[in-house]
Image 1 (spheres, rainbow, N blue to C red):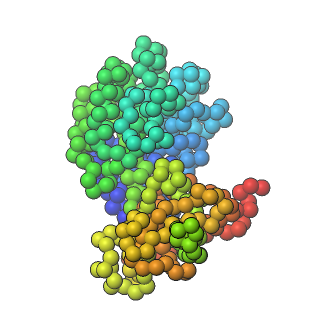
Image 2: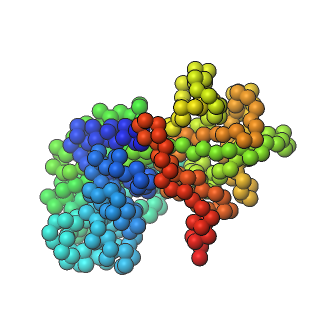
Image 3: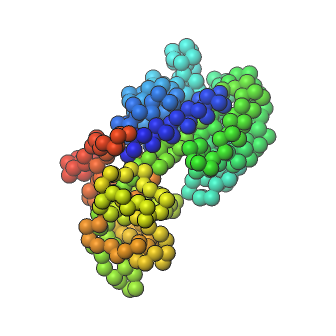
Length: 398
């Protein structure tokens, strides 16, 4: 994981927050490698959490504001969350009605240290992947306008929406048009003092329209007199980390050439199977000074004694392989990639963009060995902050 790249992203987010006059927190569901928190803590306002454990991690290791939202809370979870959250957002009117009296009687709520929000669903789908569309018909995430308008929401001081996934400010603009049409009367109430626009904003991507985002946020603040929050996850960690692996075997079967690696899509990067997501892959060549013969793209973490040959799609370069995993799951395949030369057992491949929504989703499926977590500082020095052993696998289930 490249700490300098993380700081680069965090600085961009700070610049946007300052220009727009909003607050930006990091979504721990996207990136929660807390060993890196000291590097980015100065630039962000805190973290958003999806439950008790993430909220605890935010409070213990990051500091700042802790914004918590989950589709439902248990009685036990609520007791703890009341103590460590600054914002506690509810997914349904039934959950809010169940816990309202308890929340409003809590000393932190009465002192203004704890604020409560209601997640709303503007029913505006702008994404391209059904699995990640919280506005799809029948969604369980958020309250639709008909269940809020004319309803007693006393104790609620803000609204929370999350409708985007790896999207631009243009999609946010479309969503806000619908949000204001359906929920504008709620936002105009004097007791509503903040609006959380959730995550999914690709703010740190080079082609993201940051000026439009700033304009949209400023407009909301001016029109409704509210504080605006953003909670990106991917934007914090995009293009900051890699997953390195070794080629274990190369063989041909039914007209396909297979390369079996010592990492797994299912265990180490499940979005490859779920989304599906196709990461960039690089073949490592020993010796520096050979980058000029490669593509203009490089992995987020580079070593001084290595150069990197970027793989292409199937058939684009001389040698095509189906990159597969060492598990028994037949579909545990990363994809078909082509390389400028034939792969050999022992070759090292680097999968790029493996910090966000990968490390937080890993499993020990099939007992596959977990990669170590290593930080790279701005001088290129490496520090191993976590080594996984058989003991971690064994203790997980007993």
